[in-house]
Image (cartoon, rainbow over all chains, first blue to last red; front, side):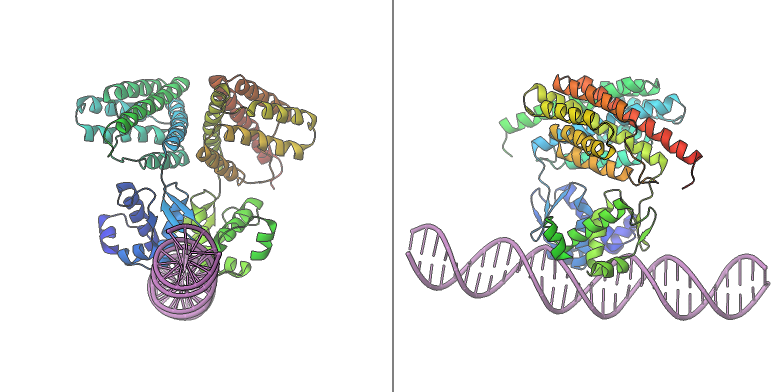
Length: 231
Length: 231
DNA sequence: TAAAAGTTAAATGTTGACAAAATGGGCCGG
DNA sequence: CCGGCCCATTTTGTCAACATTTAACTTTTA
């Protein structure tokens, strides 16, 4: 496993880091269900490392929101409630809106000369891949990443990533967070235009609208899902 | 130490948690300078626990922004740059503005029946303690906490606290983040009024103004400090 | 029968020892 | 006098064993 992980190319420096990445993957992929307990011994023997190493990995993951730690009882995969998803959307919207406003500001002052064009290119690709959900998914992530990176605030980006990752833990992981491609595309265009124009305030508003309406669409689907099939 | 900590009342469940709290305190209080290395052996012998326990505490602190981890080299107290302070202010403003907007919303819908009155009371106390910087400091923190809690978003509160704590690491810790009591008080009133009126959008604007103008005042002092005394 | 106490097994918390890597200083060659 | 190599020491990374706590099961008793 050590070898394979390194072969993949991540080149993690320490064993514990590698274990951390593996546990993270297991949670995100759903190999470990929400609410499930992380058994240190089982994990350590499964991965061929000592318990201490697994412990370290778990501790380093605890603050990310993916894991809940209970003293003398162990670590559990965090169970994200609908109420929390709402809060996470709020947080995500706040951070994303701030990032878009700053991206616009930086475009206006020439700090991000390549951003406007990159956004435009992303939008063009999205329009052509209108029906290919998988391609759209990647492009969507890329779009948001560009704006987070364009804000020049790495801490904001890492917080944003944590929040988005945690949202995926809610119930049916498969439930796409992108629900109405046409509308989403339109909102992306509004953001892109405002950023390209260097209009920070409009960029902020457009970004907030995008996240808010995304949440509303998401909620609608979840409610339909509840009414329909149970699993 | 175990006994004393428990006697104080924190009642921490595990030793590592206790050590974590102690290290955190050392960093925040400045016992450990920015950029300084955390020597596991030294810490463990100083606190009378094993190295493994210290390691665990350090790992659990790493994601909070107070500590930088470098593989095979160790843990270092994060050195916050002025550029980072700017980014942290942006983040803080975004989260605080969102929280104030949601507090206003919840006041409007009756979810937070006590909030408006509590804010008003805080403002009144602030006006009387106009010259007592120490009292003002506590009231200021309380004011912000009320709004963060009023938003009903615990994750946002914890992120906010992390951000604020990290800001204190910048250079002269003593440098107060509250710089112009009269103006700050005025801004607080604007926020409080908007929240009491249930006007989410105005609350958001007022909150953002408050953080932004706080940053501008802070920057001015830092620049003066640079020009004046070297230490 | 059911609740409570006692017992046993399993998991977490904590430690000290060993292995590997990095830092620092002295030595050698240029 | 300077720069690079090598070795000793320090420090971090990893592990296996011991201690403590929790959870589950059994037995006892009202």
